[in-house]
Length: 302
Image (cartoon, rainbow, N blue to C red):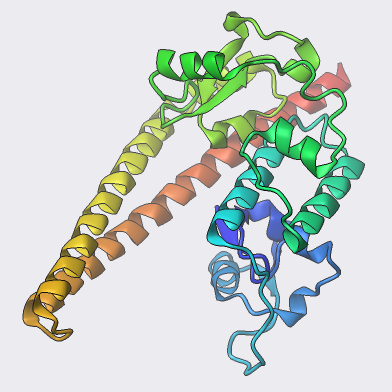
């Protein structure tokens, strides 16, 4: 689940908005590091999400009249690059992500947002170092080059080896930060969601827990494919609408109204499919995390 921050306008994972288990905020934790207060910002998307989950929403109620709230001024490309960097940081090994390192990362990202004096490349090691972040013990062991990553993606035909959905993240079965193992045998391909969920979990346990969820994984694959087809149908209809509008020059033309109705129908189907998809994702997440927590308790007990 990704939500859009009312200030920075980045689409970030749910945990960036969670003040606690059942409390969400109108702005992300990155923007709260700027000393901005959630109570000063409206966020209809997060408010609706909180209402749907029956959670508490910390933010300015949308029904209140207020002056235009401030928004961080970034270009679309800058927002996209910054979102990608934050999502990539979230996927880094949990053992490496100390509180101090995340705080430093947030401060450097804020400095860049306020004055983007260089372009983010999408290469996480390069971008973190240019931002001035401490990367000690993280990338010095991960020496995979572009050719190796491309080979892994081609070998597995862009299919996540954990859940079967589209994958483009080259994953170390045993985390490289702990194993220092860049051999082919230690490499696999995952989707970004599985990459984040697995984190530093033991590889075989993560595989076994996913095997227990085969019917659910098949539903995830089917939902992903259905969403892709619905997105394509919507794009085709929107292109058709734009072309017809250009030809007729009449906003109220009956043909245009018919196409708009079709777009509305497809959008309704997509919303319903995505809702079911997110429930499946959350169900799997909760199952795997609960398994991992039980396993950790057993390790302590032993």
